[in-house]
Image 1 (tube, rainbow, N blue to C red):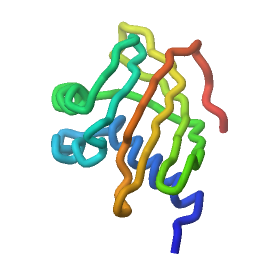
Image 2: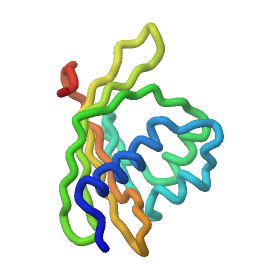
Image 3: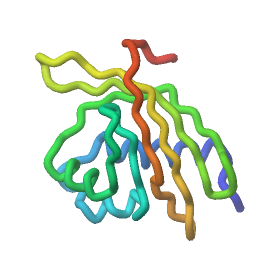
Length: 129
């Protein structure tokens, strides 16, 4: 029986947040499983980021990010676009980075993996309720 849109939305949000709340016990293998081999990202700096770059970054960095206002858009069978907004913090001295974000997730053999991600800087905002 297919999952409801609400169940799928919650599953994709959980996967998306796995990157933002990764813990020291999240292995590089875990990250590899969440990203497709052909994954790419348009970074907020304008650069193009590939899977290995994300794996390497998450092995050494801790992310302090708050996200909300998630919206799920079903593009086709097994293809979902999730959009949301986030605030990334860099300690006490640097100003936070506000951004609009989107990710495309694909499902093969009942396993969701991220294919594409983009973060676009924006002006400060407050999350919707």
